[in-house]
Image (cartoon, rainbow, N blue to C red; front, side):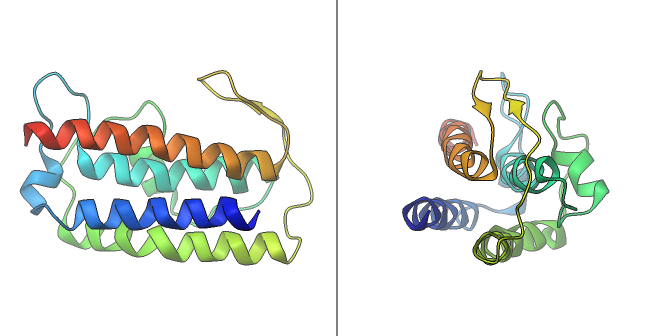
Length: 151
């Protein structure tokens, strides 16, 4: 799992660098032909990781219900994200990664409710969910790279 966590940490550093390159207005802009924006994608990967790893392991998530609803699968931005919210998301990028690493190392994840993702991946364990999470975050990084061409 060490390499999986290393990939995840590198991915999160790329996300942070990308987000810090844009103004709050640019982060909130939904380009024509898109259904979301840069900051929604950041919130989405945070909320999705918590659902895939914690919720499906039968554990409480480490984000608010409000945040979950705002960025969950199938949601769309309905209002502008504030700078305060952006700062919170940036902080969560690494605090939740570290919490997951700690919880995994301590054996906190003992059960997993099997789940098949919308892309057809069957997840049967927390380990598989963490590995899939890297794939999921890669997809959304690609979306963000595309969005930034239009803002």
